Length: 154
Image 1 (cartoon, rainbow, N blue to C red):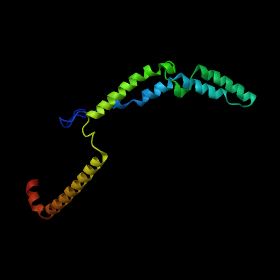
Image 2 (cartoon, helix red, strand yellow):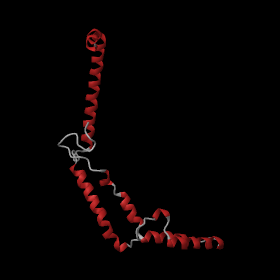
Image 3 (spheres, rainbow, N blue to C red):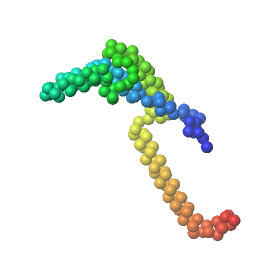
């Protein structure tokens, strides 16, 4: 039995690993590290006007959130200023370029959707014809094959 990593045909390159296309988590972490987003969450909390007891409670929450970002923005990495963003994005751009190159190497990438749909219809028609032939052969075997099959089974 061939392994899952080896291609079934020597002319077909192996499919790239899933990690090649796993770029969204890195983008999310980069965006979460942006200092502007963390400042925006603390500013929206302090700009809302409420009663005095609620505003005092909110100010204490704002002070707490100013020292610690909300749980969905905690990345473990240092905050990132906008001026540092281009240098941090470079690695992600490289990964996207590698993913694009991996896709371009795959066979039949240049085929249009219409070509693929046409081939699917032809293959479905062929499969239907073959099923019909198998049903006919099964009927013939059931009618006359009992005596022939008894000799083969022993």
